[in-house]
Length: 122
Ligand SMILES: [Ca+2]
Ligand SMILES: [Ca+2]
Ligand SMILES: [Ca+2]
Image (tube, rainbow, N blue to C red; front, side):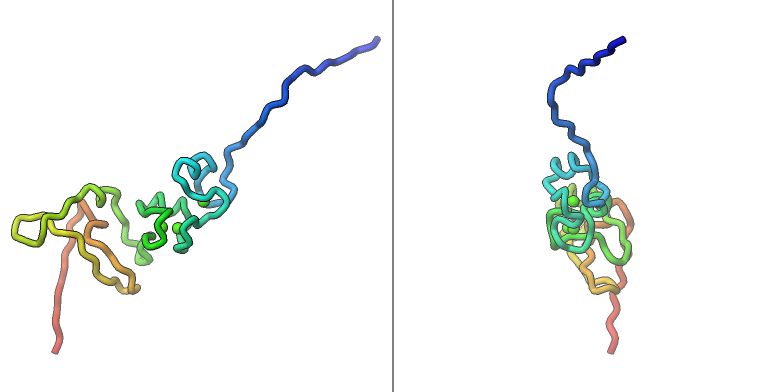
């Protein structure tokens, strides 16, 4: 008995959505974000793209990255509009250095109570 098999088909491109650079983001997600799917740290600030997205920092801005001290940055920080420093006004954003020498911004802690202690020593 002669069996003949015939495979009919058409050539098609098969694309598999993978995390080639192991930064926690799939290639399609990186394309949508504009980050480099072949580089874990697109902006070269020392934080992988996936970690930056998770930490609410910009994976395309090398001057912005998760706080080394582990302070969580809230996504609501971009919704705040400062009014000044007068009584009853929403404060403008400002930054102070933490114990790691990194600038920590007030707006990163939106929706939380921030207690500031100022001291002077002579
Ligand atoms: Ca990447
Ligand atoms: Ca980065
Ligand atoms: Ca960044």
